Every structure is written in C-alpha cells, then in structure tokens.
Length: 433
Image 1 (tube, rainbow, N blue to C red):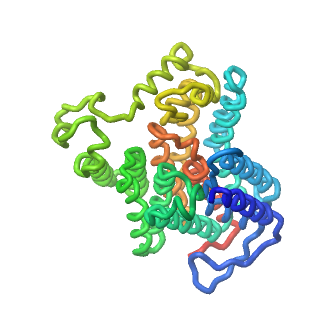
Image 2 (image 1 turned 120 degrees about the vertical axis):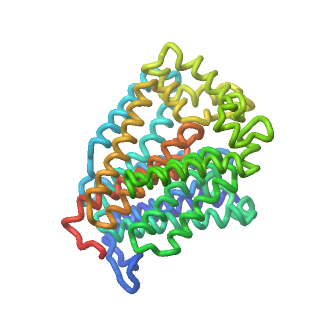
Image 3 (image 1 turned 60 degrees about the vertical axis):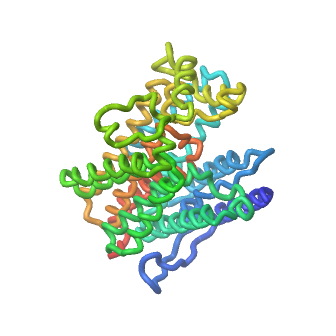
C-alpha cells in the first residue's frame, strides 16, 4: 500500500506546479453562498499547499519520500514567489529569522556532517518560505478563508481516519504521525476559536475548536496538551488583555487538572501511582517523580557531549542528528525529542536566542495588529497566528516539531504570512463584510 504514496506525491506535486501556470479559476466563496471568486494561479497554489500540509506521504524504505516532498515544496514556493504579482512582506520578525537561518548556515562550516546539517536547515527554511509565499500571494480574505477551511477539512479527515482503526490498512503513511497531527490541531483549534469569537459566533466553529482539542487528551500526548493550554492562554490574552487573567488562570488549572484527574495522563506523567493535585501544590513532587521516558537522561548525554564548552555556538548544524544515525543510542532512537535541546547542541545559545526572538516578534506583531486593526478578517488571522504560534512554540520543549515542520510550524507561520498579505491588500481589495 505504501507504493501508492509515490503516486500521490507525483500527482499532488504536478497539480501544485500546474496551478502556478494557470491564469485563474472561479471557485465558490468559502463564506458567502452562491458567490464566485476568481482565484489567480498563485492563489490556487497557495490554497492547495496550505490545505494539504497534513499529508506526509511517507514510505517505509528506499527513497526518503518525506524529504523529497519537503524539498519539492520549497522549490515550488520559490517559483511562486517569482511568479506572484505581489511582493513578499519582510517585517522585523522576518529579518530576525533570516539572521537565524544565516547562523544555521554558519553552523555548516564546523559541523561533523554537512549533509545532515543541510537536512536540518531545510526543515527550518520551509516555514519561512511558507510565510513569505503567503504574504506575497494572499490579498483577499476569501483566499485566507479558502486555504484555512481547506486545512481544517483535511485535519478533520485525519481525525476520522485515525479513530476508524483502518488507517494502517487503507491509508498507510498518507497522514503524519499522531504526535505531529496533535501539534497541527493546536493551530486548527485556534483558527476555529478565532472564527467563533470574531466572525459571527457560528456554533459549528466552537464545536470544531472542542473537537481539535480532544485528540491530545485521548491520545495522552503531554506535549500537545501543554501546547494547547499555552495557545488558549495566548488567545485569551489577545482577546481580553488584562481581563484575560481569569481565563489564563482557568486554562492553567484545566491543564493541571488534566494531568492529575485523567487516569491515563496521570499514569503516563509520573513514575509512581497515586500522585494527586495536592502533592503538586504542596511541593511534594520533584523532577525524579516525572516519567520522562528517558528524555532527561538523553538530553543530559547530548548536552555533555555537544553543548558543554560550546555554549554560544554549539557543535554545528545537524550534529545531533548525525550522532543518532551513526550510533545505536537509547534503544535505537533517532531523534532528541526536544528541538530546544537540539538547537542548543547544534547552534548554541546564539541559535536558540535568535529563533525564539523571531517567535516573540511574530507574536508581538500579531498582538499589535489584532488590537489596532478594525478589519475582522485581519483580526481573525492575527488572533489565529499569534495564539497558534505560542502554542506550537511551547511544544518544541519536548517533541520533534521541526522534523514535522510541513504540518506543525508551517501553519502558524502560514497564518502569520496571510496576515501580512491581508495588511498589504486591505486598501486594494474589497473586503468581506
């Protein structure tokens, strides 16, 4: 069955490239019934690209199909940037991220493996190209809505498939791993909440928000639970500012309650049974009580080997990945389960600071746009981008988010890029009411 993924990859890539050559096509409005909107070739390309990020199209052996898909999408984004009539936006956050990418390139000069370093670089490059492409292409709110609702529909299909117990038989390798999906759902949950709060309070949007918050609890994924709570906190801060403090406290308490009151989460979280919320608030828990699945020992090993003594610059881009693939470590693991630790070991505190400074600037920019712009679709986009970026950024602490950048980081960056594009187009296009 995996062989079909090669065919899917070829078909999807050809359709994406053909969109760039099209003069345009009339599509139904995603918001107003019986209304048509003519999409240009780049707008068609963007809509399909953003809608299908949940598809990994992996193969078990031979050609690394996911790596090939990542590279082909980056080439397609560069082609789109050349073809698009609009110019990509380049705010301070984009400049900071560019400096971060340059620092990763510098890390290639002292890495023990340039090929692994290039692979890591491409994973960090993709969300940035997605942001630039969106900012150059998206000028009309209906393009934003079409792409966003398309992504939500594909995410919904992935949930249905994952709980149907036939995925491994009918759709092996088509969608991303469950851990990657759960992180993607943070962005889709924030989108649904933003649509509910700022675009008509449709009940189905609230239902979607709840639906996409559920899998991380049902699958007992601690990292995505943490990211969802962080996203909700940021969402509340954007929407209600100082009045959000009770909502932020409530989101925090809900996260704590999930850890202590849901038996499956409690068993996975701690090394001993019977841990209660009272133990947490009275300070009777220590780091040793947390079941890290050997993460703490693994992080300590890599810090001692590649970070200590090289705190500023690290040991070179791709160092940790190269070490995993050339040594049998921790039962054969090939990922560090923390992008923060990987950044520290590969590119030092300089790389880590530049990356999170970029993230902070993006969230801050989204907050300023949300509070200062009256266009509701720009507000929806800014609220989605800022809160989803905060939620996904938190998950970098204990998961391999960068490895799944096509369906994780690409979405907050994509929403941010669409916000930048809508800002450019607000005086040029007729906005939806």
